[in-house]
Image (cartoon, rainbow, N blue to C red; front, side):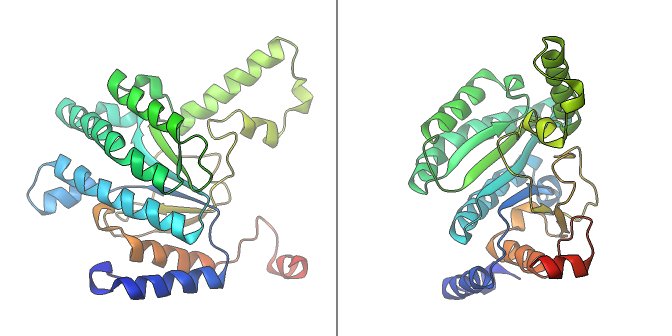
Length: 261
């Protein structure tokens, strides 16, 4: 679908149809990929694509709130991204600082609660402070939970959980025989959040890129060739329509699911 060819009335109609259909994902996670390629296609520097990608973040955050999605987790900056050219990383950090300062009032207006996951202490001091202030100012909001994965590595997240649980065992707080999936999940960065129902990856790449490896075990995966700066309301609707057609079995048979419903 192309949002530019569809008017606001049609967008509202599609949104209401999706909500009437039911089965809106409770938690959507997105690997926002393709900013650099989008800029390259236009013979512009990569930061030009990152700037346009912010507009997609804004549009998708607002749309998720309108659809009744409760959690939206965005893969914003991975630990591997620190190895990119220094100029690009610096530009990204400046863009992050500028964006959070600009958007925080709108987040509060839309009742969005902001939170961060990852090794955020790696971020530049000014960027981290702005993000923490934003999270603090939205902490009492009761609408969409917007989670930004920053300086994030899922493998590191799992290792950190193992270390924390090991420390608890060492101090006699846990019996190793009582450690189960629930307890392990509680020690992840996302410990107080449900696992994603739907993972969306833009730009057509077929990999998870070290994102939510534990949490995505039973998530539905939707890959689109659309580059992130072009991913807006209608592209999100396409992903949800596809999700609503699927049968989530969690290892069971179709017959078992039918009998339980």
